[in-house]
Length: 251
Image (cartoon, rainbow, N blue to C red; front, side, top):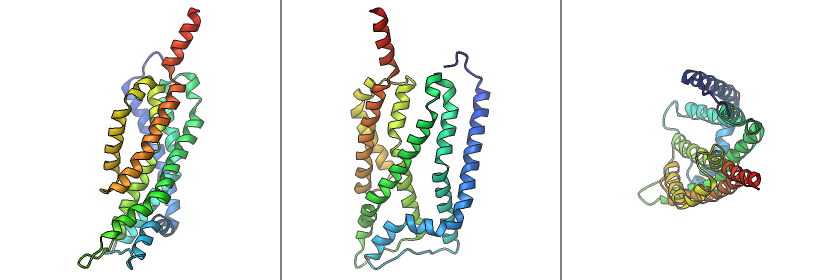
């Protein structure tokens, strides 16, 4: 680590520069993706469309600009997904000055693993959870209530779940980073597992729509990933390595 901390103005300037490159990359990918916005929308909304089709209904657009702005949001979401490697690269570049030289060289594994976890989480949600959630939500039709979802609201729920599962699957990286920087040790993370379980279920309730199905299906993988992160953090725990090296020197 560097011995002398940089002034706060330097940190803010660095942060501004990193955010600029992230936004620029996202914008470039979003502009490119807008040409396929309709195809992206149909792909993302397939679970919702199928759930409605089974009950003889389909998505609706009730405002003149609803289709255009929904497609625009699709392009932005696609741009965000395309920019993920750059986003994680810029995040690492911002925090790396506070790490040891050997830790700074882990940028490629960090970018690859972080991107893979986010994409894997979004894919897990899309293939395993979205069909169950939309089938559950579409099952409240009755003689007096007909399910008629607008494309804007249905896309909003899909985007929320998509990002929630992607972000949730970053939990091992977050836990590992806490241990790597010495904020908490792997043993402290393990002892705090009961509190982590509570926090995970609260986070799942906040990130997902108000239904038990999506909340549980998000919380359970998060709990498993937390334990994986604790295990990885224990292997690379700096405090454990330091204590081991001290004992070796004492011998």
